[in-house]
Length: 239
Image 1 (cartoon, rainbow, N blue to C red):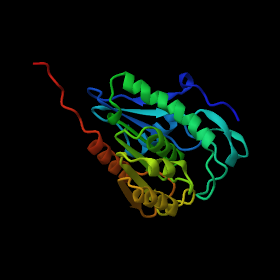
Image 2: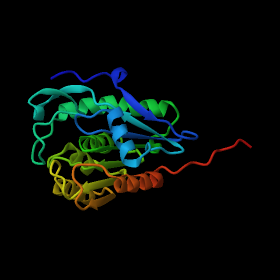
Image 3: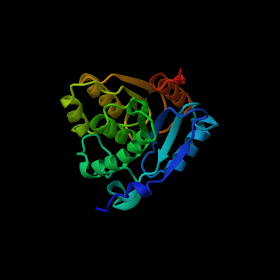
Image 4: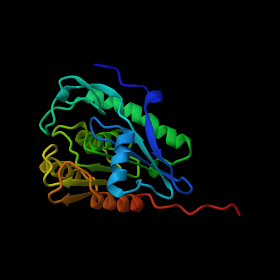
């Protein structure tokens, strides 16, 4: 297996906040995409960047690695998988490697003065799965986790981590199209139901006739939820 890239080589595309920076959103792309490519797609859907007055949006690019569904071809993917199926085992070694790399990104934000509970993790497709691993296994004190057109494998390590946890867990926001032929709607629904049964507070939004894609109404719902979890903070003045 090719070694995952170091944090120093993790490329990012950043949308800076329009005002004082008090929160950060890390938004992970789907398989084969890139941070700049994903940002461009969202910009095309919204006719503008996904931008906030106080939230920095970071779009990292997954390091290139051999990807089994492409017969070992090199692709920008967060982890390897044996096949795209809910009943397939997870390639946990590659998932854990990337969790370490992305933890460095989270730590950089904390070092810059952003509290952990003012950081949100999310993504589209494989990026949403990665965000669930990162949030529910390693960073259970983040502001929230979102997953668009995503799923967890039936025996995911995420379920095991949540089951062992006896503290508060971040809320999960999910969206899924009923016509998705790559990541079936039922897979997303099952992921949400199982996490809910294990005590995660969840929101699941169904989008009839949507395929494996992102559309404006979905992003508008997401933006509203983000602002409920990461509201703008009033500036503190010294007396």
